[in-house]
Amino acid sequence: MLRRSSVAHHPDQTQALSVRSTLSVWDRLAPNYGSRWPAALADFIAARKGYAGRLMAAVHTDMVEYSRLFGIDDTGTVARMRDLRRGLIGPAIRRHRGRLVQTAGDSMLITFASVADAVKCAVTIQYELAIENSVWPDDRRMRLRVGVDLGDVISDGRDFHGDGVIIAARLQAVCPPGGVCISRAVHDRGGDRLGLPYEALGPLMLKNVVRPVEAFVLWPSPYEMAIARRLVA
Image (tube, rainbow, N blue to C red):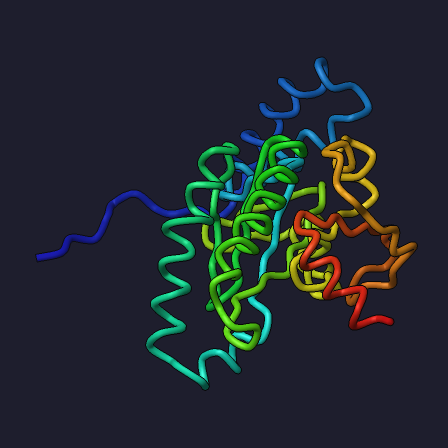
């Protein structure tokens, strides 16, 4: 049988405890962070709520014409996608110290602590995929668009948010198949130092992004670059 507690509950007491807890955090942060204490306090509160934001390189990939391939051979396409992730994409992510944090159908979000590792991984995936595709007819090849950005990546425990994630996804959407589209932030931190052909796309107005994002396309595969240029010409 449940018994009623003899201790009265006072809402003001809970509020007072919360205030005292916040003040104790202030006492710890203010001397160390000075004028930057609001940002430090926000980070502390976010961490307490299970949110974690970090400056990271985000790689977003998506399969080109996946629905068409699925319509041609649904079970075969699913099996090929599974084998591609296990045999090519997964090993490339591990070699470059990345983390596959989110998948949605034929798209993936991968995060890296290093911009160089992020770009090298994206380039490796596109290069090895071009080799893998060489044994397939043109209309059956699995090709990816890849976007890479450096920015805030915030996890709420289930999903990932932040400028880095949004811009990487938007760059992926405008990337030519077979290429790796990188932002100016990635370019300026060594993303263009792999000796690959690249093209400047200029400032782009991306969906739900307030400011223009300057972008570049790296071409890991000469074959894919030739196809893209032939389509544009």
